[in-house]
Every structure is written in C-alpha cells, then in structure tokens.
Length: 387
Image (cartoon, rainbow, N blue to C red; front, side):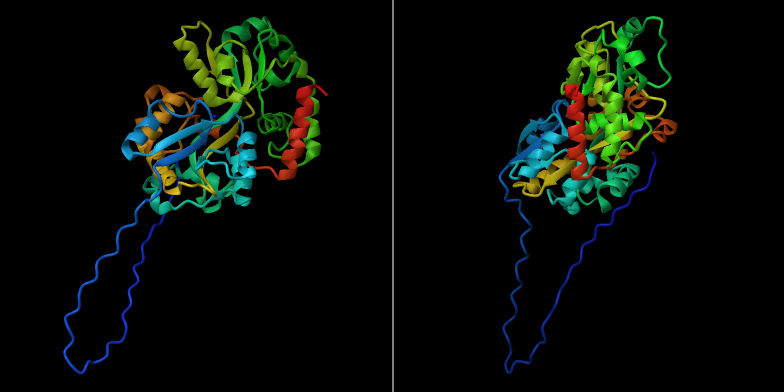
C-alpha cells in the first residue's frame, strides 16, 4: 500500500480540409448555403461506472462527490489480492470498467491484451502526475505510459506494535534490520507470543524473502524460490496469521509484527489512536531497503463505459483529490500538483513520504512471467501448509 522529476506530454489537434476543383458554370449559380457545423461528440453511455479496487483505499465522500458532479452511478467493489483480480481479468467479461492492479501484475495484463490504451485527450489532469513515478512505470511496466495511471504508491515492509514487541523481546534488543523480526528465528520465536502476520499473497511474501536472502526480489528462477522457502520454513511455526485483513489484524491486536503495506500499517496506527489504544504502531524502514509498489488505474479491454472511466480518472487526478487520498489513506500520492495540499503531519511522516536517501535504497517493482508466478504460488502454498 513511495523525487523530483521530469515529465512531458504533447497533445495536438490536426484539422484537415479539402476542396474540389471548381468548374465554370454556364449561368450564375445560386448562392451556396453554409453547412451546419458538425455536432460535438456526445457521451451516449449509460450513467454507470463499475470500479474494482482494493479495500480501505478511497477517501470518504470521494465517490459520492463524483456521482453528484457527473450524474454517473458508481458501483464500487473490492478485492483482497492481485491474484484475485488477475484471475477475474483472465476469465474475461469481468463487468468492470476500472481496475486497480499492482504494477507487478499490470505488465502481463497489458501484454495479454486485458487492458486498453488510455485516450489521453480525455484526461486533462495527466500533467499533474509526478514525472519520476511515471518514468519508473514507463520503464518497468508500461512503455510510454499508454495504459496506467497511478492510484497510489507505497512499499512492502515490516509493521510493529512497539509496546507489544518490546514486551515480547524482553532483553533482546531490536535488530538493526527490521526484516529480522519476521524472518530470523532468534526474533520470531519470541514474537510468536504476541502474533506474527504475513500478507496472504505469494507475490508479496516471496519477493521480500528473496530480498532478505540476497537474491533478486523479482527473480523468475524457481530455484531461487526454493531457497526463499527454505528460509521461510525455519519460521513457519511462528507465523500466526496469513492475512487479507491486515489493517484490522494490526489495529485489533491480533498481530504485533507483520509483513504489510506501509499505508495499511499507518492506517492501523491511526485507527489505534482513534480507539484510544495505548499501543504505538509503526511502519518500519528496514536497513536493507523495502520493496516499492505502485497501484495503478487501468481500463479493462472490454469496459462497457470507457468514457465514464476516463471521466473518473480525470476527476481523481485533480490536486485536491490527490491530497485527500494522502491525508485520509496514509499513502503518498503520485500527483505532484497535489503535494502542497497534503497536511504537514502527513508530508513530514518519513514512512509515508520517505526521504531521498532511503528512497534510493528501495527496490523498484518489476514483474514475473506466467510460469514464474505459477512456480511461486506452488512454493508459497507449500510453505503456508508447512510442507
């Protein structure tokens, strides 16, 4: 659930006109009648938009504001993992117009023809986007930024309940590298008493495990997955939860340490404060770096309301909406024009808007082949079952 940059767009319009050769009439011709101008293009789509997004990932009131402004009724459904979204897109006829895949999955979805190219002329606010984010997406996932617009970005990391972790560790000091808390038996054997949670997704857990053992986090080599799961097997007995409800699990006290998304961990911290909990929840910055992710808006290939989808994307890219996203969701926005509107306490939070020196340590996203994803899923499932 993330610097200062370059970006340029060129939008042009070409007007073509032609005229035939005029013949000399034998008699005077009647005065020509001016033709009526061509009518402007009209959006004839029904006033409906179907969106499929992650849970807990849209500011309160944003959808209602869009509906009131446009008259377009939004049906907003949620999914828990990239794998669930991908399966629905591959099956076809999803019924959704806008989906929000992680960039790791978006690349094969583009290559597989599951997402359509954007009509950039309908998205006037594209120029608000951060050039560095767009350059990274273009290089790694979406050449020329034809298909994807960032919803938000963040990083996969370790989250802790500082109070409960300190109690569980006792005299054992906190490690220099936060990944040790979830991958090193010396720590997991102590922390299991207050609960260790992993995101329930192979494409979240295997990459961070690969990174921890010094391999390419986005390796497509099944032999590397075997090494990662061998390491994970040593701590399997200490993992309490494979979570698809990480915010609730951390905020509700089911886990004191977790592999999760930075924004979700910060949301859990905010909820704990709202509930007047004495526990302090923190998103960590591991010394060896965390894994950046980008969640991206895309229009499905078979979208029935593509014009409405473009209208929503343009609406979402307004600076005030970008700031609302960061302020309420605790995820950094990719909208450069909206940064100045972000609350000072959010902008100053180094686990939301990370500093440049730590940003440089982060692992940028890549993607996996279909064969690699299948091998990864098999390796992860064996680990999860304790086999």
